[in-house]
Length: 352
Image (cartoon, rainbow, N blue to C red):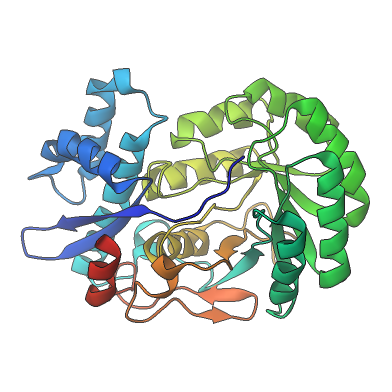
């Protein structure tokens, strides 16, 4: 676990022969993304925008020595979303129509905040007070420094937020199975909705053991790549909630395959979002398109979209018209493709 002092991400542009431009996001340092883009760009030049996934398969088949747990997949993720954005624009339809159609156009969210800072106790109370004033029904906070610290932070969050707010916690992979279980036992009385990323992403067997013993639902997946990683996790019942990040897991194509794995495994899914407004828009369309199965008319625990409440100019200032929050939901952007338009002045400022 470390303290982040800045945000960075990369934007991918795909231009069709008729001049239509699609937009996607590639997680991670832009310089690394640019180097991978130089490697794989030739596979996509001249490819039909409706057949680009064959180019993705060719990249993965020819460059298998690189593996999939790396930033090449982040670049592929950006290309995937950008290609689908361009295709939808060309057809004049919202992007969600290309990935299953919208089941809902107002996507439920949870507030993601309560970050650990250099002064973790003093800053935490102020963060909680700010979130409490936002009227959110679900809130996620960071824990993971120690089980004793976890108990203090959860206790304080409950005091500020009250009993009616669903409280989620996130460890950012800082624990082993024994420490995670101690932490869970300390905080389970506070009715925790899920316990996120308790273990290293590499510890698949640990996740399976933890899920067998955990008194709180386990969520993970933001550091997993492609449906292959998620299938391995689902096959061993290593989580209760899957959390793909569309800006690194492979984009919307892999996202849909991961959603199918969740559906076939009768597991919940809630995408991780922590980048720019582009990734948030893609996640909106993704969640809007998800099946409600196995539920009929009412879903007791709907797929929640992560809504970061920290300071994030890459989300709040990058678009001409920011994505709209409406109470405990955000509105899926309207218009063809992702339904968003970059503010060119802001883009130039952030690119420096």
